Image (cartoon, rainbow, N blue to C red; front, side, top):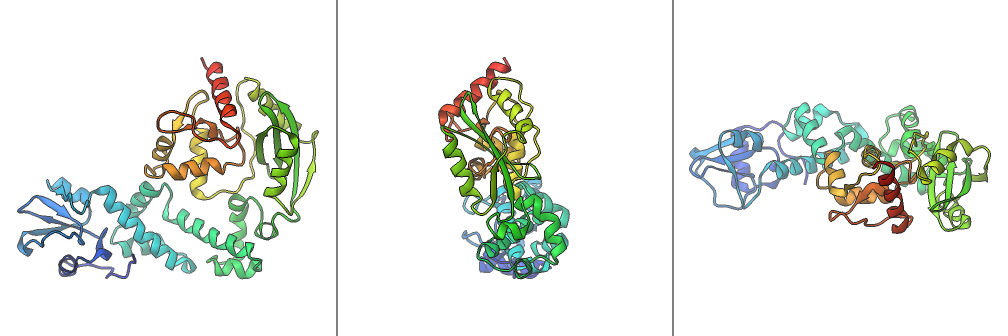
Length: 354
């Protein structure tokens, strides 16, 4: 679906779209029929009303304020309407990444004010249009870097207007500079330590910017092998003494102590993953939330499955407490380090906060 419809619509354009059942205009307006008291999408397959019985509204909320009900056949309610808007705006962003599209341009193309578009988009996806564009641009860049393309060529082809714009954002989004990412972590120094803990073994790894990995396992060898697989070209060295200050609070937590895990982090994440991880950190110790509850808390109520994926890709367990996410029926669901460890972590927290 694309935004190649007229950017400024009059009632004649809207009526033609209704007669043509043109799905390109879904999300641009709704059609309310006075004789039935129902409003529809432009593409609704129902029998066409008479023109004199029709009023056009910019959005479902406006039609409902005047007493109209959503059509059961085409489901033009607020959620469906907003989904259509967001789908089309996402397509618009994809086509204009090289141009760094402005919110005003997107709003004009969607037939919404910039402020309204911002609210609709964020309510549907949990991120702003700019954050979505940044994430898509970053995905393009990462794909090109992984294929061995030169950084300068990759950044411009991915839609970055300048190298300074890329590098000012890269540490927070990539966890490393673009050149280092392209080389699989080459020239990147990672220090790690492994300590025995009540749940087996604990590995903590860090760059000069902060902690990049916290993992649990049955043996030190397994944990070290996994770390090297994540950063195959990095310089990885063991540093028990240097990382002691960061390991101690994690060990205290695993031994049942009060969790104070505000450690500096150096992790790669999409904008959506960061929102999920922030929501996980906001869950009080001893409590859990379902994936749907977490999705709703970040403004993306339909993204429960994506929340589960973000939990699974959390590289710093314990610091970002993905063990507090559970299935809809309250059962534990999956956990990268094993369900027994997840249950033990939750029980420790509950006991601490009785």
